[in-house]
Amino acid sequence: MPPERLPPDDPREWLNRARSNLLRSRAILPGVYLEDLCFDAQQAAEKAIKAVFIARGVDFPFVHDLARLLALLRQSGESIPPEVADATELTQYSVVPRYPGATEPVSAEDHRHAVASAEAVVAWAEERVGAE
Picture 1 (tube, one colour):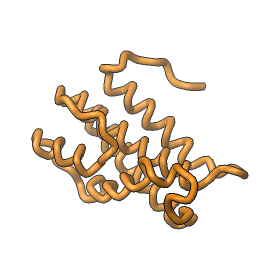
Picture 2: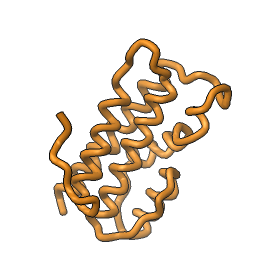
Picture 3: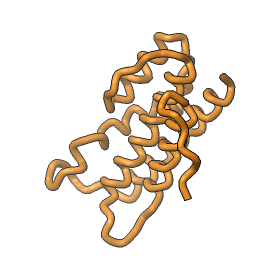
């Protein structure tokens, strides 16, 4: 059952969405492409990062580029730990791998790494939003 929906300007709603994507990223099911699960990992990280923007009262662009988003957060005075900065590699899953033949299939190891990276970003964002 999904959590109670909150207003879109509430960082907790963005974290709810991030957690939803994170749960889906872990759901290895027959017939589901790992690329799609990695897209969910990327989305979890992106929404978690945007939750931190909202908690800080800082505007953000609606882009999928995690490096750009983290750079903007850093410019706003937010400290970005290494495990969160490493998540910028998830950007590669934001568009191209979702289409047939655009890239090589994602390996099981790549998928595990993507999920672990997204988990680190979501945990960091939960701490940041909870600290506000």
